[in-house]
Length: 432
Ligand code: URA
Ligand code: CA
View 1 (tube, rainbow, N blue to C red):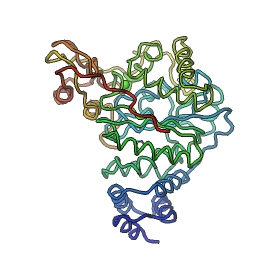
View 2: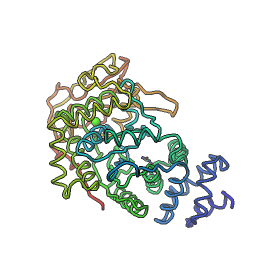
View 3: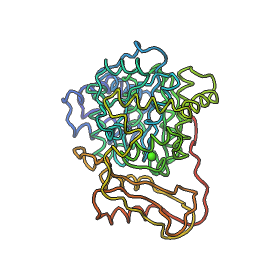
View 4: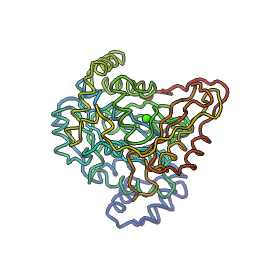
């Protein structure tokens, strides 16, 4: 088999066979297929798409390119959740301890930031000492012992995805339905969860900018999950504006803590209950979503979920004191408040550019080798649909430099104020 023939076949809109897909995944993983040929195939896939069967074969080949974790020694139905990416998406850090607090084992494999989107693993590293690279056996022990562990994509989990993900990031082939679906589902299948709740984001801050594409991505992933024998469902959620108020690392950890204390932003809190209820039902700890939600509300309001977060932090080597003293995390040198330049209703907050503004401050990576400044970010005081008076604080910027004219301009240019609009609906569709 020759790689050039596969590229040509896909370029002409052909359908790759299972053997051809396996040849590509094996060869790219072991280095016998070079980046330039893989890039060409990715771009051909981007333009010519893939059939369901091709996507399923690609997913399974990627899932089997490395270790496949066996979680069967953990009692109960293990549920994972995965978002297709967003700006200020702090849900996992609230959701993992909350769902664990009602007795659902949460074996969560999370990622780092990609493009303008943030990653849970980067955020957790803002907690002093927190270890995100946990060996498989310790990961399993932790879930058995305290019901929750959050780890990064361990050394040999779906290595094909690891390489392809990095290549896509620099070849303009991230926002492709077959490539996102296979990337996410290969990791979920390899990481061993029995059931999967997908949060498929849509809107300006997501990779899927419109609802139809988001639905197609969700349907594709749900089908692949079921074909692989995992109970899978998807919530399509709004990412036209950032989720919650904080976009950064330290400040998102603080936001997660506040949410577990019952003082979180409304949209983040609601998103956590929506996704959490689905997880509890898939784990068969509740029969209905209403019952599941009531369990979660009780765990949050009683403080059990907050205790679980502390337990999770200390079990992974982090300092649990930050829960009561978030100021023990790295703090930015400058706190700069941006006043609203006019009175009116906040009409739009362009999530992608707000994410890029946070990245320019240092909260994300511009290149793969960049390191992250945990202390910086932006906090939105007004969300879409809220009214603001001229002079009132619109945004707080956390920065380690005071020359941030470009960031200020970017924030002003991407938040529009004017006539009254409705708050956008958070849940756009449910796909089962
Ligand atoms: N998250 C992933 O894991 N992969 C993608 O391709 C996009 C978001
Ligand atoms: Ca947030």
